[in-house]
Length: 259
Ligand code: NAP
Image 1 (cartoon, rainbow, N blue to C red):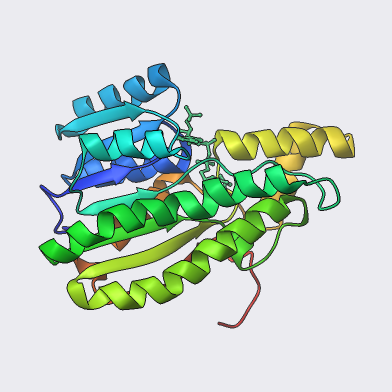
Image 2 (cartoon, rainbow, N blue to C red):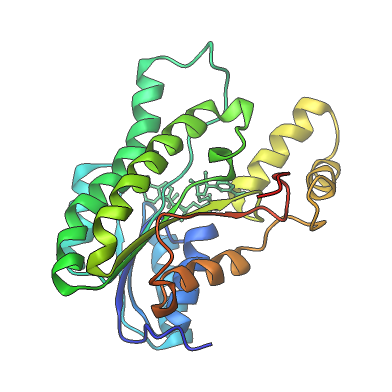
C-alpha cells in the first residue's frame, strides 16, 4: 500500500534501536525524510547510516537526552517543521510502590508524560498552520492493563493518554491527527532485560522465562518490532486522517476483552 507520505519530514525520538528504530525504518521505507534521536551517538550514527543506505531518504541524527529541555531543543533546531512526530523514550525502571520517592515520580512523569506533551506543544502549531500533521505516541499496553512492578510507567503514561484524549480532538479539524500506540511485549533489548530479571527472580533460565511470556499471549509469540513499525507508519499515513485519539493495542490478544 502506498502510504502517501513520500517526501514528508518526521522526527522520531528514541530511535537508535528497538521500537523507535522500527518505526523510523518503516517511515524511511515510505519515503519520509527523518531526524532520529537517541543518547548514545555511536549507536545512533550506525542507525542513521543504515537507514540512509537502505532507503535513500535524508537522515539527520541528534544525540541528546529527549527528556531534557536542551535535548528537545537540539532535536527541533535540526528539524523545526516536521509533518510527523513520533514520541518515544526509555521506560521507567521496575520496582515497588512503597520504595518510589518523589524524585522517582518526577523522573517518570517527566520522561513518559511531560516530554511528549512538550514536543507536541512546540510542534502542533506548525502542523496546524500547514494543515497536515501526524503524531504517534509510543506508550504501553500497561495503559489498559497495569503491570504491577511498573507502577511509575502505568501512571505516567495514563497521564499522557488523558492529555491526548482531549488535545487530539482539538487539533483534528486542522488535519492534525494524534494517536497512541500501545506495545505489549516486543522483542527488543528492553524486553530481553525484563526476561533476564524474571529468570533470576524465579530461578529459571532466560529461555524458560521467554517461553512463559510467549505462551501467555494468544498469538503465541512476542511482538516483532517490524510489525510494530509498520502499524506506526500506517498511523502516520494519508489514510489515517479519520482515526483520532485512538489507543491502538499491539499485544497479540493478551488483553482479554470483548471490545
Ligand atoms: P529499547 O530497545 O531499550 O530502545 C530504547 C531506545 O530509546 C534506544 O534507541 C535508546 O537509545 C533510546 N532512548 C532511551 N532513553 C532515551 C532518552 N532519554 N532520550 C533519547 N533516547 C532515548 O526499548 P524499546 O523496547 O524499543 O521501548 C521503547 C518504549 O516502549 C519504552 O518506553 C518502553 O518502556 C516501551 N515499551 C516497550 C515494550 C517492549 O516489550 N519492548 C512494551 C511496552 C512498552 P539510547 O540508550 O542511546 O538513548
